Length: 84
Image (cartoon, rainbow, N blue to C red):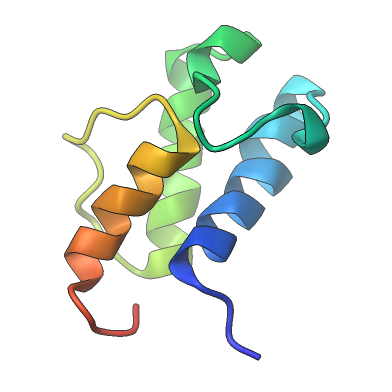
């Protein structure tokens, strides 16, 4: 079974950003402000780089997001019905 964009985003956030901060993914939902968890700009840069690798894109540098849902919505817009 192929992962949805939302599932892929969540996996990358859980495995990189949340793991690096020592945050239990069960405590974070799609609307949780990722900055409120204690991350800083370097953590966000690392998350962005991991998302770009996962989705094979280079277009997240200028995107501002603070929740998993915002990331997912942006990537779904980039996808526009195509598999990325």
